[in-house]
Image (cartoon, rainbow over the protein chains, first blue to last red):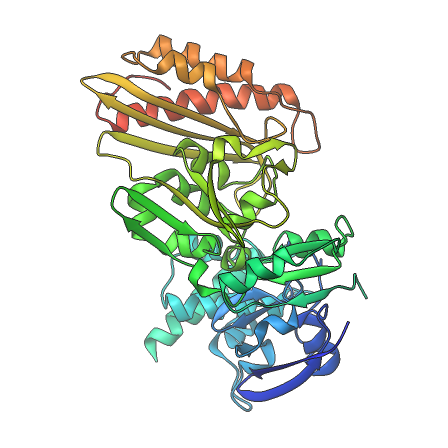
Length: 158
Length: 294
């Protein structure tokens, strides 16, 4: 296997990286870029802990070859806050105690952000449908769903 | 580190089929969304030496209607299907299956061709496509051929595709107004679960008579199958509660389910009976030829 050069942006910053054909985006983000907010959960696309956005679409980085994001815009959990200002979804997770062990949280927040970008005021059913690929084993779903709805409401008020 | 392989990323369909033709003896697999294949590679269920990624071939990602046919490019994602008014109109069962397909992130990458090519009898898009009499277009360096989806699978995870062929499109006749198409997925929970039994039904009618019946059954045989005896009982008749019950029982007889961790064979057979009855009655009602069935 030979390394290949990929060019893409991570959280708005242009990157040029040499990666192997079998390098997963997840491992490149965590090991080469030290962006460890994105979590390695199940590794088989069942849990959603590794969710990042690729060109705006929530994507499982554990099943995505790094070479395939050439030319794409990748956003990770580290890219949501603006300086010290948390994203409204992150704020709402804190305000609503939507975090227990926290392992699923980055993926959950990325999913919540993607939903609100597409649909600023989702119904509870829409939130639950959208979030069904993200698993929380502490089972904090009620507060996670509430947090995403509150983030939508607050964005509308401000 | 998991498996090692070489990766090629052709920029066009022509380049892709040429790359496939050059496989000579090298275990080569085609990679689309990766939601199934990457899992299999990581688990070492398959050990390819070479992967050909279709990520850059945008010409394979399209939904179009040309004359009487609707065609879906093979790299069209499940999310693309969900966003398509054309699929909603001309493939209601397919749209319904896309809605209950895994979770959002998988839907964003999983492709129509990948769902067919993985060969799983529980593949959710296959029963609807089978109920629509869809064809699969297979392309290699010297041309293409069209295979009815009903003839595509030859056994569990086995199909008629040759190693140098790529699934490039799936197409079917735009159903007329007198056609109804329904799907239901039964699983252990609503979200992100492998299908226990999936049933898709298409009915056509003229002058109060059922002129066409398709009953496609998922996850109850080595391949997604058609309940042909049940279809034959429905075609040519005016559907009544009794006839629908008989045909549904026939479908349950025809299937060959197994016991596994998700459900017993008996349960699956019962599910085929109930779902077929409900979907046929519902599709018949869609055609405004209502019949009372619970």
